[in-house]
Image (cartoon, rainbow, N blue to C red):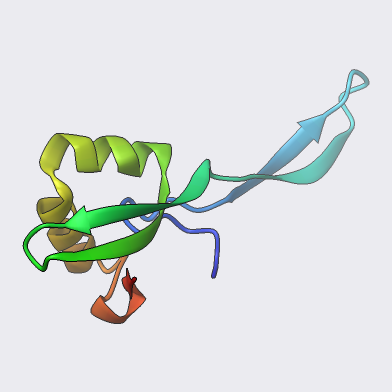
Length: 85
């Protein structure tokens, strides 16, 4: 599974490490991702999502069902990407 949040669509970006002598080398800024299980009340199942900390705050604010609807509309998650446990 790639390192992309299933709720917000956040993914790693590329930037530079800048040393004291201003020498620049490429590096990646990864997203704060983790796998978390949620109980989806509308479907009465447990699902497992790979989400970022910002995605978790979005779920807490909007609710799981609304956050998943918005993620499907934005194309960040598809019905097949949600793992049923």
